Image 1 (cartoon, rainbow, N blue to C red):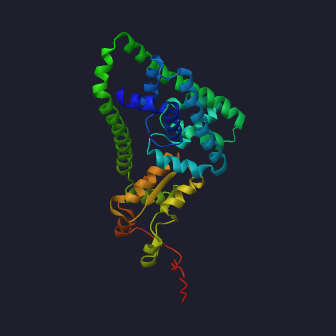
Image 2: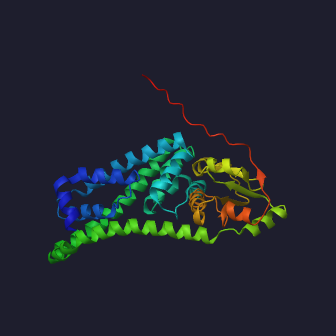
Length: 324
């Protein structure tokens, strides 16, 4: 692993500390290559196994404690931010919360081995009111297990190099390219999975006729109008019983959204893009029964289905004081 090992030889524990700290703060940098390289160098006595473990542990605890305190202070707001930062649709805040509900601090023992959960675990622990002492106890054990596993794997590779030094020449030719490909693959994979969820949500669109049949049958449906207030000026109507929210406001108040019924989102944008993206955000936040309305408001209106009048929307421009 010529590229990471050469950098580690130059900057040593400081680089390892900074890399792990940044990665644990939520920046999607792969930590595995740097830890494997540090473990391999420990076999050659160019780095201390214990020193590398200590540097990584201190960095991890600083980052995790920071997120723990932020989660305790700001709750679901920081969890929404981390969802956007991670770009990981398969990791859901509600699943993390459910894990804490079942296992409590034990979740921290394996959280760092699960992509996404490693970032969400600390703020969720803070949000759930876990004591700081208990958090540090479980989190330090979990971080130690993770770092030891990565460093030990690198150490085994380093021992193999000592037995067959020619193996290093072969690895040196390809390690730089493999690291770059790994980082690219990491980002491309996340973007690809994000698009898959978007396609799934678009495929799960609810037909206007099906929604009307639900309303006619008296079913409880939570309908959300995502249109911009300016659109309501020209057409001050909405679907029966719909609530009007901006996408950000809806996500911020996601705890108020009922989980026991369909949540139908509609807008007027092409292919229900805003509704689909908002549905994906809500899906991450644990709302499973969320569906965009096919064709949105325009299709509902074109079909002649009933509409409710909305209160006049007053959009005011900011007052600009002109000074001479």
